[in-house]
Image 1: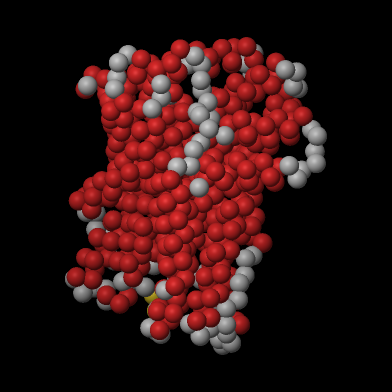
Image 2 (image 1 turned 45 degrees about the vertical axis):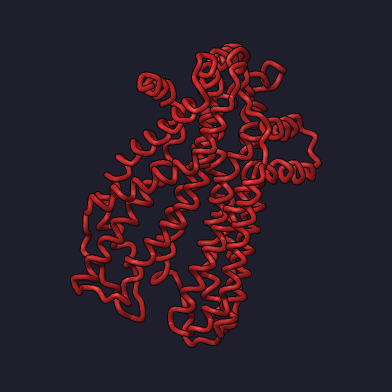
Length: 471
């Protein structure tokens, strides 16, 4: 078995390399949080930092573990699924050679763990090298007119290794279902070219996961009167963190239901566009044909847009609430609080964005063949350039719809909770949030979809199709 695992590792590393950015970001988030936590507790235990003033370095890292872990669980699962889809032929030949389903499952799990650990080496180096400036970032600004004291950096390798093991655990949990799916690939797949995965299914366990996630969102709302009953200076801050929790958990629910939700959603809104352009019609139909791959590509983008909109709406909403509540000096998160909320959502946002880019990169070879066939069918060079850009637009808009719904849940929680806390709540989502959250993400997705196709567009179409068939 050891020889089998090693052979599969050698054969699969290019596929895992395509999604490695998400693994690096997940490890970096966990390692940064572990180092900040170690530095914070060392400062508290030595008396250099009061416990009540240490939330940035003791409580926030724990919350970040939860947020980043939830996003990583979904993103890593989709990345592993994309790798398996790209290697269906190889996995089928493994089964044809006599490997049992259990051996195939263990082989994929070994690859998943090795990929996570290999990326951990890169992430750990970055985390250790940037710990001091990261602590300085967390203390940027002032609170109550006094500068927040920066703890001395503690480069605790034990904490980093524990963080790496945490990412491995998340990868194992998120990837196990995909490994089981790989083991279910029949040997007959090795006898025919079948790059496309079967249509996605939403089983009972997945619907139970959706229900549990929505129940957690409901629990956040139910806890509002309890938290409001402990009136204090941290009440508003607690509500802000809980609002971020509702956003993350709601998007987890949407991501869990993505196989049943995304394709009908894309079909519905694209049908509203009256254009009869052949390129637009081809882009729409490519989305429907891809099915499972399209749903898995959309999931990280939903997280990216939703988290970015939530993050960019917090400051203006708090400012608007303080003005409506009649505070003499309006509260702003531009300085004092922004570091804390960036530390909570920023790493999870980076994981989601890396996962979205990686998944689109994994689809590049199949996209090259589709563009080549489009050219053989008579498409002009300009039409072949436009097609991937339109597909990226469809991805972004489809992801934006549930992401905006998640923002609505978060803002609703803020309205209810801040009102219960004795404030006059007011919502403010600036234009810049829409431009950066949806427009900026869209530009990144267009680049990730369009740029990898440029090399293949310079080659003769039959050669591109033959190259994919050979793989």
